[in-house]
Amino acid sequence: MAMKSNDGGGPAAPSPAFVDTVAKIMRLYRSLPSRPSIDEVEAAVAVVKSIQNEEQAKLEEISKHQRPPDVPEELFALLQQVRRTVAVHQCREHSREAARLVELDEMFEMLGGLIQRASLLVSGDSQVEKSAGFDDPVAKIAKETGFQISRLVGSLGFRFHFLWGRKFCVEFD
Image (cartoon, rainbow, N blue to C red; front, side):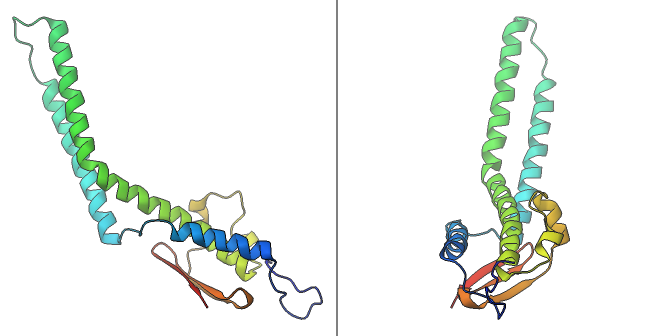
């Protein structure tokens, strides 16, 4: 449990270190850019897949080029390598922003699991050790604890609201 009473008569006030640690977690979370919407992530995934297919098609097309008879083989091989390099670079440039959105969403998924574990610890939920050991991977924790948390942590003066996978906010009283 996060907070225990010394006299057994209810929860004790959290220590300053406890409050500071929770505040650091929240400060770090608030410093992040906005989480992309589901539609933005789905569109980004589609763009990345489309560009990967385009890249593969370009590389296959380049490999079909025939060396002209009057061009040395080594020079033609260099031309092919330049073509492949430029094709890959162009495709990666086009997919960079979409890939960034997908990576950002993956980071929020991971942080969501960590925030959920923190909210269980703050609330004093004794099931936190049973549902998620500290050495379990976040993906396993997400599967085991994918439920809504809305807890008032009275003496700390804030609430965690978390719906696994998409929403998270903290309200300070």
